[in-house]
Image (tube, rainbow, N blue to C red):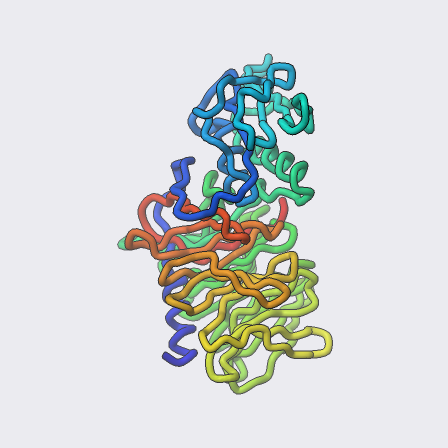
Length: 427
């Protein structure tokens, strides 16, 4: 299969997306190794609610990072709610820390008083590491649970948590008048909002650095065009509508540029659109197909896929001086890269199928997935989790895996198919 056919195949795959919002907090864990740090998230005392169960949300958040392995609550011998009630004997010896708390009605209608503490179980006696209390509207309970997860994760790792982020994705509902939808949701799939519906394909969403806009591709006018959608005013602006390809937009981390693929001059090349200036700069010039631009974390260079040496591989080009570097050189195809904040790359590698792999700064490649058609990896802003689309149970669904490979799970997606996930920056 030549590279043009590969690109067209990937575009066709990207058209597919899901039918329903995710409605099940429980993850179906499909992989991982038992090397993560043990943590106990004790069920919070007081008000319980299926959709807003704080301790369950925190437990799921921390598990997804791969860094922590929350223990089964049935293995906790008691249910302490604060430091004074915590005893080390309630937990197994390998449990390092515990999260305890309460949720009780406040004097304000629809508002709850939430308290929580992070307690170290190492040393002779339990020790408080964090303690917070807040009044939280019921409608914001999930967001507050993610804030707890962020605080716990950062306190224990020194790395900012990415649980209060969002994702954009394309959803496809077969047999409907407008089967293509551009949607956003919390990173775990809840609180979904439909932004755009179309009878023609929508593709390749990418977030702005402030999390207020999304650039994407639409075929609604029977040709590929690139739009920017504002989440604040629900309006959109057309960016490009040249003849030929207008595809693969990627917003730079500093917010000043959007990389994209245009074939207006005859061959698919990488261009930069200067946001606010309404002008283009051509980045690559080659007779091969250059596609799938992705920005480095410092916005100084662009990774892209090219078949200039015979098969798709990853390259990097400095946008200031044009210096070009070949990043991958395996005998198999490598494409669809997503840079991480630690100078690593997540990409699709054709080895025993199309699989998600992590390439570190030293050039060591580790496989994160084992499917035959895994695609569209997108990385959390702290570089610790990867979301991607995979064929699972006969349909396209979202999978999440930690970048160290310790944890992998399927995110329940209801009916339909999901593709082209894009992880937001910190919000």
